[in-house]
Length: 393
Image 1 (cartoon, rainbow, N blue to C red):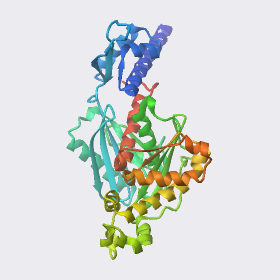
Image 2 (cartoon, rainbow, N blue to C red; image 1 turned 120 degrees about the horizontal axis):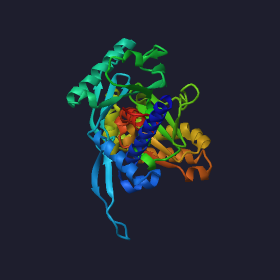
Image 3 (cartoon, rainbow, N blue to C red; image 1 turned 45 degrees about the vertical axis):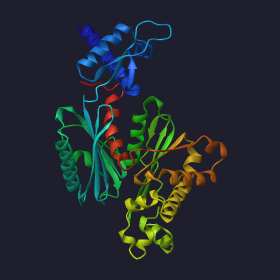
Image 4 (cartoon, one colour; image 1 turned 135 degrees about the vertical axis):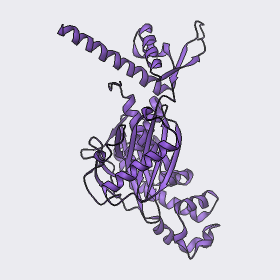
């Protein structure tokens, strides 16, 4: 009797893992034929048919239609895709004085985003309360059904023990080693916490699916009037590398603040179409205005962003030489000025690495810009959900 129970359990585990594998393949391909699933997995067509029926009954996948016949003719293949309305995930990016939130559907598409300019709190309890309030706000605004929320991903500016939900060090609060996950247990769905640059790296991998780069560095650029920072997320052979104490990528360079850059170039403001009006009031210039000026041809604003790119290129060149990645993924609000940043970063790297390293290096901008961290945080939940070997009930 005991052996029968063990065999039954084994069969159930195999069935669940096979379902998870098929679900993961559909997620990676977006649209895929059942015949292709048979070819990739090596399972029988009848097994794939049963798995697709099971996933469809759970509303995870939906029939997309029939594809084209091959050149040899034959039956048209049946195509399958994820049901985008099956579930939702929430992503939260926490910075000093503001929170950015997004809601993604089951296919990872952004359906809602917002930024809340609000003091995040002076204590862990205040921070947790503000997080819960912000999450409840976006749930209410989007009329999300609680049972369809897979979870909340939180990206934190600092060093994070993602396995235990402990923030080891951060600029958000002076307190060290605080268990943020413990404070959020009242939320009725899973919560995952990660470093902000690492979250973007996971988000890029999820969005790219099987076509994403296998070795890349995410360069998260954060700069404002009085705060600046540079975070690096490292992906090696398709896997995020956090380091032995979650500190991988924490270079701690001196990245000047926006105010410092403006002060340096203040004497040349008269040459700029927009900045000439701010000769005596640089405190009124924020990063959004400087971006606007640069996009509209203000040559001094563009010069400032070129200088920012140069400093970033100088800082990350040793990491490029050491790791020889396929790509750099630039993100953060200033990545919107991609032409200037890419050119200046590329120039500095060219001067500091051997040509063969630079020749194979692609520099890409994450299109979510300001919301890339929040999207990455939400992707933590989706990545965990689609992971093969993690059985869903």
